Image 1 (cartoon, rainbow, N blue to C red):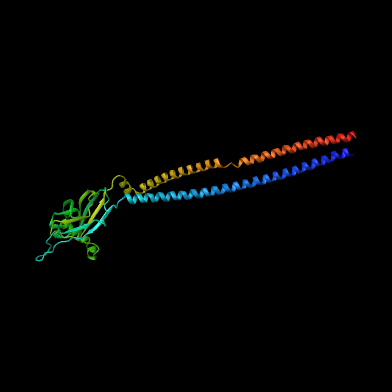
Image 2 (cartoon, rainbow, N blue to C red):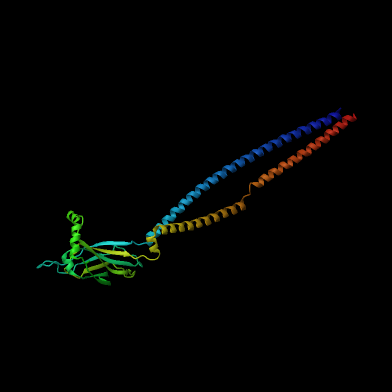
Length: 329
């Protein structure tokens, strides 16, 4: 009887041990599945966050690139492009006559260039004077008159130009017809009989960077001319890139901003690629990937399954031996 009970107790022990290992394996398997599911959920969440952050960073980077490109082009335009035209009113001075009607000296005026008119070094300018003259019989009978413009630096004459001018001829019949047609406007004061004479003294004037001009002296070589007003005109004569930027602003702005966008994008892409490459190399050198642990876990589970299968084989053999003993008895 002891011989018979002893195998049954051993079988029961083996069964309890096998059952305990099976329960433990099931718990470990369930824990592994739960952990892997949690890790996958965390990976999906982190991937979603990463995609969202990358999208936001890409949009902000694109907006930043456009803003910087526009700012850079505006700064370049402001620094590279001078003003196209400078207009400065000129107040003519003369000596009045004490014993007769009229003036006893040539009308003249001095215009200070700084700080009102700033000429860019290396940029050619066209310098002119516009005279507003009354269309009077006195000016018509004056005929041609001379006028001169001098460019000075601290009373030192740098350049001088003298030009002759004359009012536009109008026949008496044309004067009568014009007066009749414009009589309502002339009576109400909205129009007046006058002419504008523009005298161009310099077509390609360039300021010397070593001797910057600071004044211009204008003089009319006639004591009998009548003048309403005088204006100094300084036009910038653009050529090359300045000509394109001034006369085709939309094309030049688009080309300049796109060029800045391309350059900034290349710089940012190269910087990002170098940064991410260095981070990936550093991570591979100092940290293991998460796959190594999972492979070890799966190997451990396979070993446990093999042990359990071996235990089941042993149990089958023991059960067979016990049945043989009972048959013998």
